[in-house]
Length: 361
Ligand SMILES: [Zn+2]
Ligand SMILES: [Zn+2]
Image 1 (cartoon, rainbow, N blue to C red):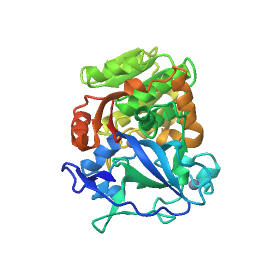
Image 2 (cartoon, protein in one colour):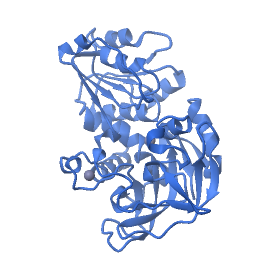
Image 3 (cartoon, rainbow, N blue to C red):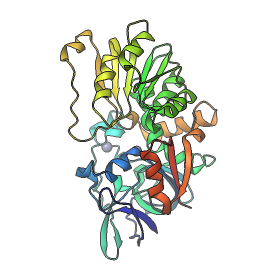
Image 4 (cartoon, protein in one colour):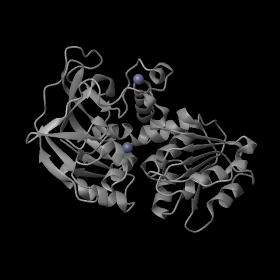
């Protein structure tokens, strides 16, 4: 199989050939058909988040494909099934799995004999133990989620991270209510999905905030009723103006690059307003606000992977897509072959795309 490896931060990825090891009893070998190129991959290219994914590493964690082979103890999928991979474990036994937050599963990734790829005898890490920038991968059965065969692989892959993270932040983490106001900071792949999650929930108004007009236009396409270019106007005041001077019921930070929007998201909410941190800030990002502003019972909560339970929530997303109520086709801005993964990162860095997809067929 072929895979794209990051050997050193801020260097282009290299395409290499690897041999796959045999699968363990509870593992699944998946022929990958498509992988999204996510901002989290880009964080690692830039030398961030090295605590968990220090290079060399096969990047990619947003993948869809076909099950080729299953171990004798696998009962949840079979050869030929179409699957989307979950980048969190779902052991079913830990406290978080038991209380319905398998996105926070406590099972470590490297348990249960997770195999490493040997290329020329070298062990190789895979991002989130998936490494979807590759033509094949081996995963524990609990992360291979069977899906409807009618869903195109490129669109399906995006549900494995960006779509679930954004839509789930609105529907699962915040549980946005109909007719309530929502502000979304950032119209990238995740922010657009927070917007469409809020639209599915019936929120009104839905205010998109970004510094790029092309991104704000995408925000409108995904359900934003109003847009604020925060490079031109102060966003907190603009959001208050659009919400009867009170502020939004819910605010979502979906950028994760700089500290300011994390504080602005809290400031732009009304009394008892809920702020959800969806974006993952670079390590040691301080959020500077006066603790007193929480006295009006404002709430701040993080959201990981849209508080999803992949076996329940991936099928929900695909049902909404098939009913024409959730956009996936529009997210796939460009398709690249694996060999052009570095061009896909260039487009991401320049803010040119909602999402790029690698065609791995
Ligand atoms: Zn991601
Ligand atoms: Zn668990």
